[in-house]
Length: 515
Ligand code: NDP
View 1 (cartoon, protein in one colour):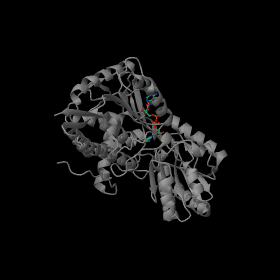
View 2: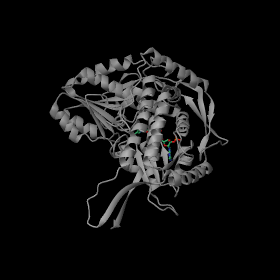
View 3: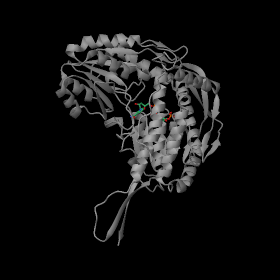
View 4: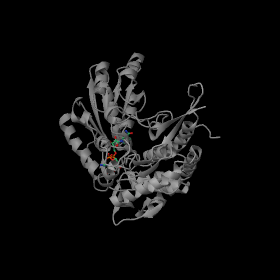
């Protein structure tokens, strides 16, 4: 009997034994700096003559590890291996596949600090951010295991005289799983677990900036008993092997999370039917956001400022759900600005390995340059109130940055920056605030701080986002309780971590027998 799903608790690092366990894990990861991780194709390690260096964003000369880099030849081998494995894996009972996920969850729980420590160095996640990522990965394994059991339960169909009718769900085949670097464990595990627990085989192409934690995750799945070829691990360039795999006629589905630019490209490429292709490809694409929090005139202003600052600068603003716009009503505008500015200034910036660090470095040189170019744009489009200073000597550090008086149609208020830059926009009244909030091409997360019940109900109906939060931060959706996915150019609204997710990886078959 499988116990009811509960979320993995977060680690309290005030507790000395937890702190010591994390310190030991950090040392263990340091001891493996520079380790080389091969591709895994059909269960076998494969190396090529090219390597991807994974760097520590806080100490950019430090190579955390090297991942073998696949080319198109290895991508073809991985597809072949996955289809070979599919014959057997698709016939495993759902309960057997679910049990494998539960075993993997147990292994990950035992080694949670090792996974978190890897992300501290590879992604620049502070201790609590890394711990949250690991906890979410464990949640996905536990939750999708249970969802697979639910999906396998017999469906009640209306009775027809003299006939037996059955509806069952069948796996799609072989798919490509393409996660981003910003939740390099949780999203990688979530997308992979959902695909395999429903009986599919996959090629996992991790983000090139964070392949090491993904490699650890594949090793863990193998240890849990995953048969060869069910998950093939294939680091490599998105444009080279990503395009090859997405366009390939033997790819059945693509599960992608990442930027709007790449997501729309993949959707377009996958729509072209190639010679020899025997199906229309299914694409799940979760993409970016330009997420806003409205502060109403009746709001608890301290709570609002706290929630906005946490949502805007946690993990350096590099979350799809991060607040990048604060829309504040005229009567409380100056007060909220002051409260946010003092909190943003007080954030402790430093290396992610230091447990007192709240804000670390951004992921790489290209994001560093891109964010700074927006800071420059902000000097023209708004009034710089806090931060804006880079320090690129050791790592890619950018101070938490706050621009006031930004116009709703400014580039700063429309384009996803994906860094610690918050724009504050003034609204005449509540209707205007909602209008501004909805005025982007995205629709991922949003929030309202208000004590006015009518205003909350209005937002419930009219704020066009996939995940809407009232009187709290807008990041940190919990698996199970808060299924996650966005509207419009934020993607296909797949609602990861919810009951609608696994059906995206199966097709329904109905068998009718005349008795
Ligand atoms: P990217 O779109 O740059 O990359 C995502 C993945 O796609 C990477 O593995 C990348 O590989 C791969 N890729 C790149 N080009 C191609 C291609 N032509 N064909 C196939 N695959 C390709 O996103 P980031 O990794 O920079 O992630 C940040 C983005 O993700 C933000 O926009 C953020 O909002 C979004 N995101 C959305 C979430 C959601 O649930 N809606 C959750 C988390 C993030 P490589 O690394 O080799 O380039």
